[in-house]
Length: 624
Image 1 (tube, rainbow, N blue to C red):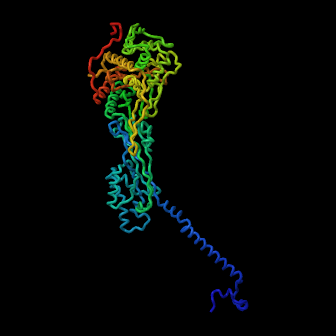
Image 2: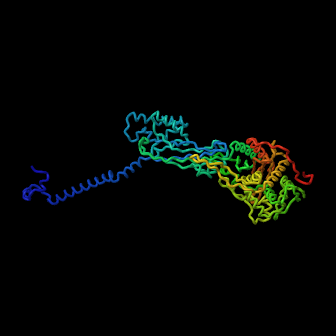
Image 3: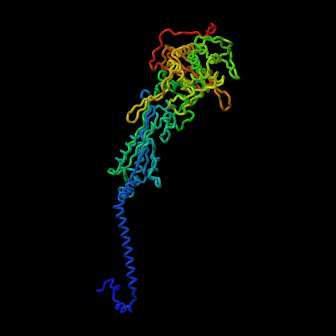
């Protein structure tokens, strides 16, 4: 019996006998082809075997890692932004646990089966799923079924990620998912997207600021303290399948570190009342804007800091941006006659004047190429130094300021905080303007009575007057009381060391002079029943760069109470009023009176006792 390959190995004789029947291939060529075929097959199998060894043995770890990467889902775990509270613990800014919901239309279309075979019941359930999910969305999120159905039944590249809603409370989403599970529905997912909220709306908005759409601070303390408030995001990674997370799959978790909580010196209740008083005053005087600050002179703590118009930080991105910065630190202005408190205090402290010194005050005085006169026109009169302040005499202030060396006077202004930032912590703070050491005479004259050459921010000037109220000791103004880290560590806010500007005697004399000024106000806008009050007003012209001329006024008034032991300083600035007169007393005075009255009552400051002195302002009986 012959074998299949016998013909290749037959004897030569046999080959000759059979050649008549059919042609045979040369044996050598046939054997070579078979050998080549066998070699190719062997090589192929060798390569396959080698690859199998490589995959299963040598590169098993790497291959497994690649497969795991394809199955791994990674999520950022957002840190919760720190809370901002007032001095009494009332929440001014907080972060709510909210999520962004999106739908996987492909998963909904197959009711979770994806590419797996579907039974008849699976197809029935999948067809009904979009309508059922839409109904649940309406129930928990509002809206209409018609709004949601197109997203739940979408096809194409974005079918696996259809945006449904954002800023949804996490608790609401959990309830929604429970309802989905109860009805055996799948296809909704969520990303953690905490929402920054300001429960009191516009309250203290220009202090707090707001956060942008990325969750970063965009203004105010939210911007200035962003790194502390923001915290550090965490990360979660886990193995996932088309039907969701694999319960026993590999997982990694880096916990987020929440941001620090900030406690402010602001009193939310007083802040609200101050904002209402200020807004009413700005509207009544038809002014461009206004600012108010209430400060504790003994500590430098700011209890209220308001401006009008303001904005709602819950919609900060849509606000009129000119109303977002805190003007009390960003917008310097010429202080007007409030500056006289600082100039006369410096001169008294240098021993160059005393409250009862008599000064001959002409109707006007030449300063540079111009003449300066008083708001109330007069001829030559005699005033006590006390009367120069009480009658707010520009001419008298210039005359006595010329007794001092210019640089010596400038050093006092610097010690009061003028010409440098207060370091209060709000962004965009200006240092104001203070003439240099080699200032010309007219600059010294203008800075002395606050009419020109000097510009201050509201917080600067308030802190300077507060130094007088604090017995001559300057405290850096502060808004932030403490910071509490995520681990509970409380760090008190540090400020610069208090420093003495003028002597206690000088401060006491100036407070007495301010009391005389308040007493002599014919409209009694500074009077507060039961309390001795010291005050000073200011009115200055605004320089308009568009016309290179003076246009409009800045009016202001400041109050200290009670004079015998000052507990509070209240300062109001009203920009460009068009009604209710054109002076600090008539425009800003009523707001100072209202806010100071509220503050004294709110903090239970004891009323003044004893006899109230009434001191003369001039040796001339006609002026007394």
